[in-house]
Length: 362
Image 1: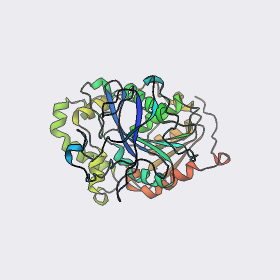
Image 2: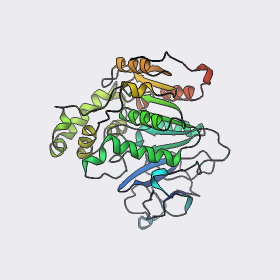
Image 3: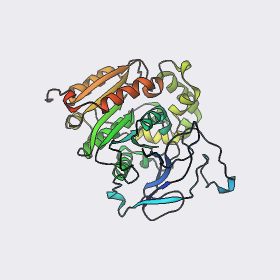
Image 4: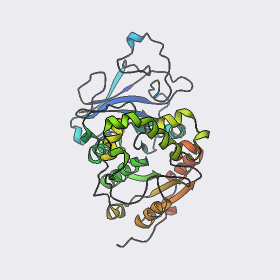
C-alpha cells in the first residue's frame, strides 16, 4: 500500500492544505510515499488549483515558523504533517488508481511526469516545474529510490531497471489522468519509454532529453563502477568532478548548486544503479512499437550521448522528431528557457502537425 512518513498505513494518498507559499519557495506537496513494500520515494506533487496545498519546498529549504519540536523527524525542510486530508483510499498497491483527485475540476491540462537519471533528483527539474506550474499543469516529480530524499535500501538488487521501472509504473497509476505527458532525462528516458509502452492508451506525448539510442541496456564491463562500493566511496569526489566537467558545456558558467545536484547519490547507490542497468527487452523493436508522439531534445555539446544515437531513434520510431540546443548533457539546467519553450510547443502541437515517419523495417 502507499504509506506516508507520518505513519498512515491505510493505503491513502495524502496532501496538506491551508498553507501559504513563501516567496521563492517551490510549489506543491512533498509526499513521502511507500510506493511498494520497503521502498519509500519522495514525490513533489503540484496541483493547478489556485488554493492548492503547498509544502516548504524540495529545492530551497524554508525556515519553519514552528518550533523544531513540531517538525517531523527526517524532515529538514520544515515540512509539517498536520492538516492531512485523505484524497482517496487505495485498496491494492499493484493497481493504484489516483484518478486525478488532487487536480482542479476545471483544469483540462494533462499531468506531466518528470523522471531524472542516475545521480540526479527532482531538484534538476526546478526550472521546468516553475514554468509549467505557471501554465496550470498538474506535475509529478519523483526522486528515484536512493536519490534525493527517497529511501536508500542497502540491497543492490533494489536498484535494477526492473525494480525501478515497477516503482514508476505504480507511481504513474497513482497519479495518471486521462492524458499524461512523460519527460525523462538520460537514464530516466528509459523509464519513460517503458511507461509509454506499458500504458500506451494513457500517455499522450513523450519528451526524452539526452536519452540516447534505441538499444537494450546492459551493465558495461570493466568500467569504474565495477569497483567495490567502498573503493568508489574513496574516489567519489574525483568521479563527481569528472562527471561535472563532461556533463556541462561550460561548468564555470553553471551555478554551484546545479553542479552539486547533478550527480549526488551515495557511492553504494551509484554502484548499484550503474550495474543494475539491465533491460534486454528495450531493443530497437521495442522502441519501434511505440505509437506515441516523441520529442528528442539534444545538447549539441553532449559528451555522453552521440547525435547518431538520436538519429537512430528518429529512424526507429514512427512519430519522432529532434530539437537541438546549444548545451551539454544537462540541457534542462543549462538552457532552461529554450527547453521549456520546446516542451511547451510540443505539448500544445495540434495532431495535424505531427511528424509521421515511414514504418521502420528491420
